[in-house]
Image (tube, rainbow, N blue to C red; front, side, top):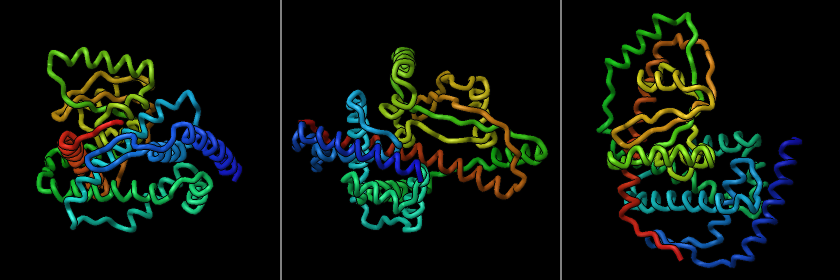
Length: 313
């Protein structure tokens, strides 16, 4: 309860600061994305939501960084909504919507009703938060509908991983807490320069900030956070890279078909192996499907983004 009160107090301070900033800027059209206008008040609202959902408060020093993150978030969501509107048959699960709202609230140590109250206290339209979730759910439905027939699971590889699990079921397994940055492919002669540039930015600005700014992965909105990943859920090449990377360090680049991957190992731990093979198989298959769909999502978004005009005022 004390934590919630502190958050409310911090967010009230945030509201005062942002309202002042908004008055100074004066509301006007900031940009157009296709035929959709984005105003300065839209940017302020997005900043408030970013701060709220990340448990942070507004400071003048972070203004430019917050504005950049807010603009990127609005562009991504608006581009997705423009594409979604082309497909009238898309739908989402109301249960999934409720679960996502609960997850968001839990992440900042509160329930959904408290989250609504804090939004109201800080003049944040809660419907914007709901709309963000709906957009992602509809986008996921779109990507699945478009690319479900292109999901090809390597059964032999899955079975091989299951055999390894079964043969070592009494042992512990390594688990890694990882963040990622994925960038689009660049010409071979520019690759090394690009890698050096990214590493320098990470050193100066921090991995999370760079991931939010330049990563084309869906995890960019979470600063590249992939969460905890078990060793048997990733490819052998990826596992070897993670194992050779110390906690807190940045990996050497991994070249993917869709781009270049750089990851940060935030922590490592050992946990009990999964002994339920059917559950393990389902998890492996679902993980592989999610990776494939994520790559299709990145490629599809990039294609749509390049077809939409963005103008700043």
